[in-house]
Image 1 (cartoon, rainbow, N blue to C red):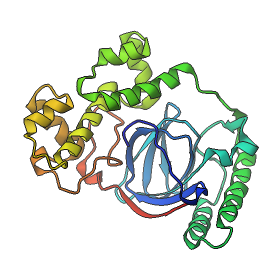
Image 2: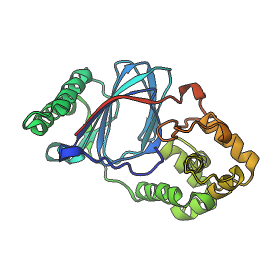
Image 3: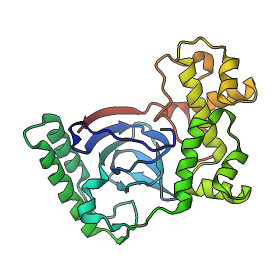
Image 4: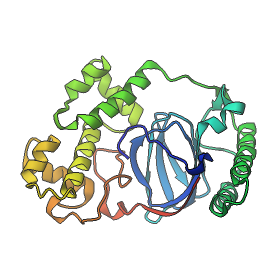
Length: 291
C-alpha cells in the first residue's frame, strides 16, 4: 500500500473485516481503523510505533488507530490472520487508554475469534452485526484487562505533518525531491532524514522510488502504449538506466517483461537498503469476509 491513509469501506456498516494473507507485504500506511494480527504460520516483521517487531507463529499483534505501519513476510508461505475494525467500536470503552506495546503478551485465542467472526460475517443471519460486535468486544475486554495500559497518546504535530507529506508525495511524485520534503516538514536535512527513517522504517528515497515505480506499473497497464522512456520521464526518473534498475529491484521484472495482471500494491515493503527477493513477492489474500 502506498503510504497514505487507507480507507476501509464496510458493507452494511457493521465495521468489521476478516482476512487471511499468505506472504503478506505492504508499504507503510495507516488507517483510523484498528487491526488485530495473528501469525498462523511462518514469520513476519512488522514496523509499528517506530519499532521493528519480529513475529513468529502464535504471536498476536494489535495496531491502534492512526499508527503508521508496514509488514513483510520473512519466510515463504507465512500466513497471517487479520481482523480490521472501526475504531468507534472501541471508543465507549477505551477512548482514553491504549496498549503500551502492540505485541500482545497474553495467551489470547485469536484463531477462535477469527473463525467465529468469519462465520458470522459470512452467514449474515439476522442481527449478525450485533453478534459480531459482541464477539469482538468480549475479546478486546480480555486483551485490555491482560495487557499493560497507558493513557492514549494524542497525535503530535510532526506526526500529522508526516502523514500530509506522504499524501503530498503520492500526488506530486514526478517532480518531488528531498529538498521539497524538507521544506514541507520545516526541518533541517539531517533531522528530516533521521525523523523519516525513525517514523517509517525506510528512507525517503526508498519511499519515493516505490511511489514512482507504482505509477510506472499503472502506466504500463493503462493501454496508452507509451514508450518506456516517456513513462520513466513522467514518473520522475532522471535516466532510463536508473528507471530500469529501480523498476527491476522493486517489482522483480524488467518494464518490458511485466505480467499484464501484475499489481505492485501490497507486494513489497522495505526494511533495509536492499530490495527483497522476487520469490517473496507473491502476497495472496487466501480468504476474506467483509462487513
